[in-house]
Image (cartoon, rainbow over all chains, first blue to last red; front, side, top):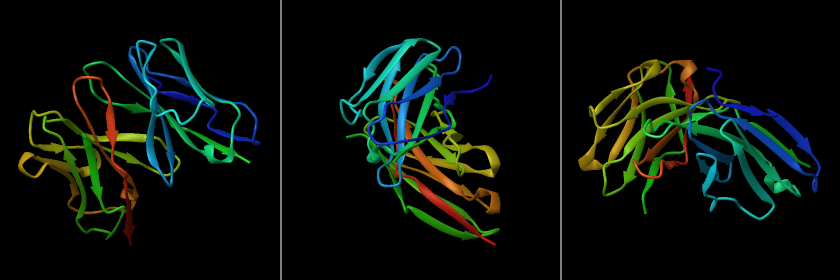
Length: 113
Length: 113
């Protein structure tokens, strides 16, 4: 099993540009989570999906952020337009119902100039 | 509100000394409890997990944690610190329903040679 795969690992962009982060969960996992990690706020849950359906997006900071999960093997987190304060490491994680264990990807480090 | 608290954002120990990282949870219902470790520039990895089978849980790399219901605690210990243990450690809690995970703010462990 390749684990949770995230891309890109690093992204540097300019303020105002659109950013798309991608995630492939572990096959068979029916929960997918997006987290953001910063020095100031620590690890924050942005949104999570169950069977491709968004369950709780209360952690999404603003309308500039959107997440989709078109199928069981792919999810995106989009920021449009991006701002310097969005600079952070974004993690995707997945789990299987009943197993109650989160498996994290390696993260996508976003820098907005 | 159900949450988890980690006491001490930074802990320093000498190589070979005891490691003790503290975690307390607030919940009226016995939860599932976890410790995750994050090495620099990596995602979070599961160290160990408590699921009510046994109060003393052994994890990877010589770490263990003890669930104490009376103290609502789940402290992480290791008898002898190794240089490779230097990392960020996160305590987390979840419950059966919703499959949501709540993370503490993390404790950065420094091991002094």
